[in-house]
Amino acid sequence: MQINLPVGVSATIVDRASSTMDLARSYDGVEGFPHWIMARSQTQARGRQRRSWLSAQGAFAASLVIQPNCPPSMAAQRSFVAACALRRALATYVDPNLLTQKWPNDVLLQGGKVAGILLESSGSGLNVERLTIGIGVNLGHAPKDVPNASFAPVSLADVTGQTVPVETFLEVLAADFAAVEFKLVKQGFADIRAEWTAHAARLGQVITARTSRETHTGIFEGLDPDGNLLLLTPSGKRVIPAADVYF
Image (cartoon, rainbow, N blue to C red):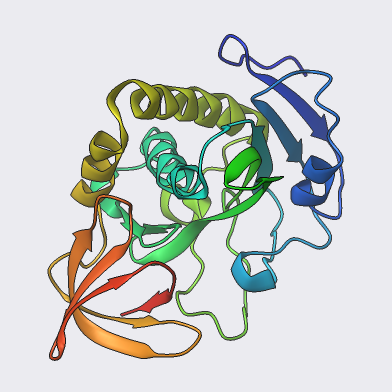
């Protein structure tokens, strides 16, 4: 099937893979960068901290491989680029007011998790030479009986009653990602941060951020200039670079 992608963007589409992140690691760059790798089904998909990600039938599963050649802190900003692009793409099919973004890298639909993002990088020293952005979206009906889910899975089809073909969604998402990435390169992270914050879930409300060592509860005040979580707790303001968020 021929798909329409932005100029300079290429894609590989396979019927089945262990995960698109696995395929991305072996991508030799022959088709250039940015390069999307999409699988119509995955057998060993995973999310952050190697948690399993259940790919229900009709789910979108893809990884984008880019060469940012930048410090790790700037490479991490692509998580917000991807989140903004995902929200834009999903808003093509559903009321944008139903969509919010949960720090650090989930998209919620009516309060349920509709999409997740995973970043993996490689490089030398303080330079990220290659970055892979894995994206999973529940386009078909959401998986059932997901154990230990912090946010119940929801799908686009659950809300709209229609299933968007994965190839069509790739076209929309690739165009939106290219647009947001262009915005980052030309205008800087401040504009991406502003777009993300405008649709942030629970902004100004009490949330809990759980790191590998501590748990903090306080008022979610947004992002700092680097994308870290700002949390106002009874013991003062916390700047949190990595955590799982609950509310």
